[in-house]
Length: 102
Image 1 (cartoon, rainbow, N blue to C red):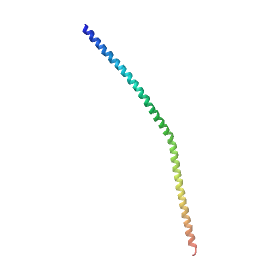
Image 2 (image 1 turned 60 degrees about the horizontal axis):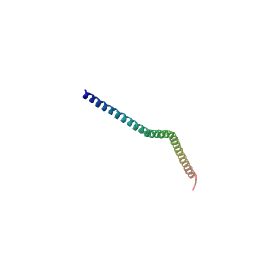
Image 3 (image 1 turned 30 degrees about the horizontal axis):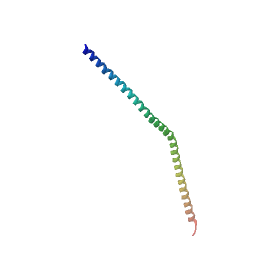
Image 4 (image 1 turned 30 degrees about the vertical axis):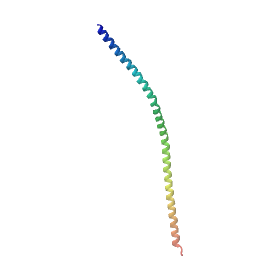
């Protein structure tokens, strides 16, 4: 009976030690997880902020791209008009020279 009582005491001691270690380890891990969450939330918030800024910039970039494309088209049209003007002036001079007696 004495041996049984000693064995039960040792078993109870081991079990309570295991539970205590598990509780300590669990609370330690929870504390570490909270610290990690606090640090990662800063990074996540910064990333969200950067994405929001990028989304705000995208329409401005689209407007600028469209404006640049329109300016390029206007410049091409100006160049075409200038080329036609030069061509007409040359034709006029050619016709003028044709009817001029030297």
